[in-house]
Structure formats: C-alpha cells, structure tokens
Image (cartoon, rainbow, N blue to C red; front, top):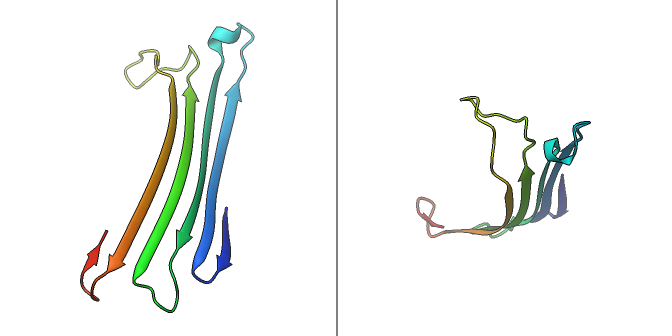
Length: 98
C-alpha cells in the first residue's frame, strides 16, 4: 500500500503472511510473515533532500517437508527486526551524497 499525505510525503507498507497446517502434527507446520512500514519524504519545491525511513519485521519457520535445491531439509528459523534510514542530499545537479 502507498498513501500520499502531501505532495512531498508518503506512507508505504507491505504485508505478506502464510501458514501451513499438517495433519501429521505441529512438527510439520510452518509459517511466514513479512511486514513493512515506511515513510518517504521528498519535498516538491526544494527537492534536494530525499528520505526514506523503513521498518521491516520478518519471520520464517519452514515446515519439516520444505527442501532446498539440493534436496536437503531446511533447518533454519528466521526472526528479524530491521530498521533502515536512507538519506540522499543533492549537492549539485551532478553530485549527491547518500
């Protein structure tokens, strides 16, 4: 989703979620969640500064039946919180610092 607050400011987001249930029990179940929320700033009149602040939550629990390209069972569980700040400032028309 993307929502424009003003001509120079936007809120962005994304949400993906899935769960698998198995009749063989909890050991064979898995889940996946990815949620992203961010704010973008780029003023229209004075557009030398561009900013994006973003938070991502990622959670992945593969089921016991999931395999990789080599046929090996996936053994990892991933839970991540990632915060990011991207800033770019235009020094001239040809040079920017980020």
